[in-house]
Image 1 (cartoon, rainbow, N blue to C red):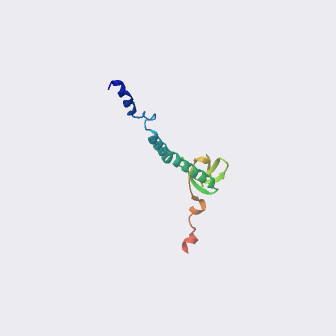
Image 2: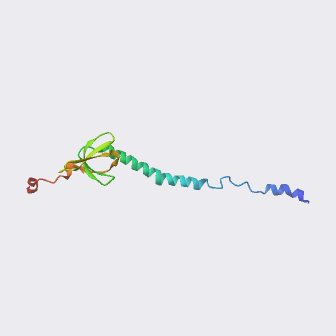
Image 3: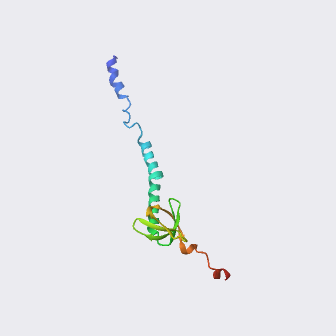
Length: 120
């Protein structure tokens, strides 16, 4: 047998060409799933909860702002909230509605019981 007869036999035994992506499809999909489930989805849930919080605030709610200021809501506009931060001096401060971080309760819930209630 000469060398020319072995060429077709060698061509049949060759491996298929390598994958053009180099087998990176699965790790790429795994990375995309990780980013979605651990970054995008929690941020979306947090934003939805913030929108519900801002939609539920009402007059006389005690709130905490993102800057750390406590106050009672006196007035609510579309994108602005007026808080009373000092009852004795009647200090009122305007904030962007998005600056409300938490609702602590209503003013009525935090008033101490009167002396008559304590005696009963």
